[in-house]
Image (cartoon, rainbow, N blue to C red; front, side, top):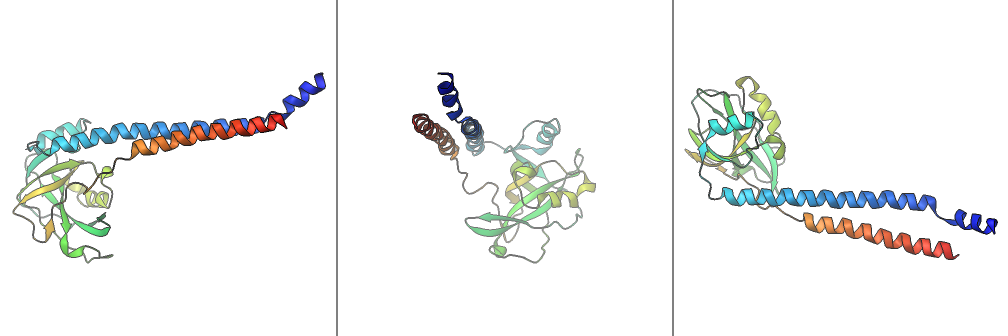
Length: 229
């Protein structure tokens, strides 16, 4: 009797059970992470929708909020740029509608403010679309720029290099993605926001949770067959 019980215990797939539990936990964790991403993306899309009708506010007050650690991404601001020489800034690469594009950067000097400059992303350089290694170009900041603020880490590209180029001028922590410039910058098309922001996180979450459930069914079937043999 005891030998039969011992043999049955030895047939229980301990290793398989542990591996299955680990894989199940990982799959459920990935599904939960996608649900968190879904909430974040829905909030982002709601903010962008509100932005479409939001008036521009003075830049100085918003930068002060950013310095206090507040989230100021997608806040529409207006900046007046003082004349003055600034170092040439590198073009910033990107992808738009499947093409490689290059974005023009300029430094807007801020008179009498805590920050000496705010970097302007003026938009797409029309003549450089599709080029792999364009020749350097220098762009002058307009006298007035209206657009939305974005943190460099949310934008990617080489914007950190552009910030480093004006480090001595106490640059603002956020980039101003220009919607309208006065005067307009020749050869540049403003493109402050992505052409399309996808939101497939619910689909991804259901996929991960579905895989977790499928894994349990597979484990149960294997366990049933093993215990019967």
